Every structure is written in C-alpha cells, then in structure tokens.
Image (cartoon, rainbow, N blue to C red):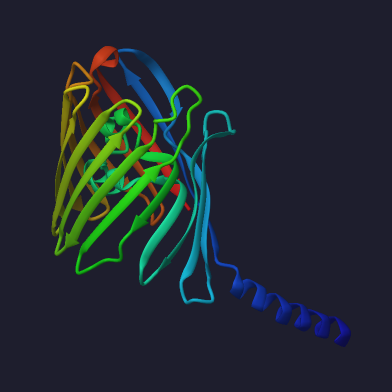
Length: 289
C-alpha cells in the first residue's frame, strides 16, 4: 500500500512540471442549422463547424512562440473537411510575426466589423474576394500603440503558369473607447486587382452598429454592408444588409440569437440571399468549446 502511494506521489511530481510546460488548448465550435429557401427544400446542414489547437511556448529572449492549427469538420458527415488555419509565429514587445495560413488583417479589421450573423448572409462580400483567410503568408503586426495597430503581409505563392501571383497587403486599425475603425489595401499582383476596404464599428452599451465599404479596382465593383446588434440579457437581436455588385440582388438578414449557456446558443433568421435562393429562413444551434 505504501509503495503504491509513493509511486503515485512520484508520478504526480513528474507529471506536474510537464503539464506546466505544455501550453496548448484544444478548441472548437460544432454548428448545425435547418435551412429552407426558394432554392432548397427543408435541409439540415453543417454551419461552418471547426476544431483546432493553439498555444504558445516561452522563448529564451522573453518572447513567445505561437502556433495554431484549425480544421473544418462536418456535422453532416462526421468527417474532417478542408483546412482553415495553420500558422506559427513569434510575439513580444516588438509586435507579432506570423507565417502560414491565417485570418488576414483584411478580415480581422474590416470584414469582421459586420460579420455578426450566424446565418449564411454574413460577411458575404468579404468571402467573395476569398482573402479572409490566406495561405503562404508572411505577416508582421505592430504592438498596440494607444489603440493603434498596423500590419504588413505578403502571400508568397509561385504558380507554374504565372509566377506573378503574390498578394501584397497593408492594413491599420484603431480600437479604443468603443470605437473600432479599420482600413485595408490588397494588391493581387497576378490579376492586377487592387482592393480597398474600410470598416467601422461602435459599441454603446448594449447596442453595436457597424458599416463597411469596399472598392475593387480591376472589376470596377463596390460593396457596402451595414450591421447592428442589440443585447437584451441572454438574447441578441441582429440585423445585416449587404449591397455587393458581384451579386445582382441585395442581401439582408433579421435574426435572433439566444444564449443557452456560456458556450451554447441557438439562432433563428429570416434571410434574403439574392439570386436563385431568393429568401427563406435558417434555424441553428452551436456549441463552442
């Protein structure tokens, strides 16, 4: 009996330092929804579920090594789907250098301002460009300077048919006293496309309002979005509107989100998708961990 207790004590002593050194977190969000619109009969669909791991490790210099890997999963098939994020970097007083597949400042500082709905009508104009997440990125983000942050990035991707397909990216953000303003410039060298995006959001107690504008030089297209949320206890009222010249029709959503706990919520949306789907509704459930 005494030997067993001693063995357990030794095992515990050895495990404690190992646990202290490990700084990785498993996280995820499983999401499912019921959809009915003019183009789809009643259908149960996955709603962008994902599972990932992220963490950090202290460096001798006092900075931290950071990493993240995130994969899309399907609540329809129970299978792994496409990759979402895969990056590593270094962060410290000097700012953050990050490499790999990341959420771009273009999304974080402009698109995310109006990305408030759990439905399909959410940040749609950002997703049209397809650079909300990007691969082969080398990026630097400055430290926060009294609410101001800036970033520069390049996507170094060589194509057999055309070597000149890199993306250059600069962005800036100011976030203080409830006001969040972002600006982004993308130079897509392979196509010659230049994209300028501006986003702003303001929080006043339980009310949040946001707007975003985007100009795409080569395609001569513009897009603008409006969004608002209002919290009433565990209930959030959501509204969004998108006018994107890629789509011939405007898109809008009216939605109610209800928290069931700290990490679970349901939603119900009336949506105008534009195009063949036209209008319909979505009802969904998500659990985060």
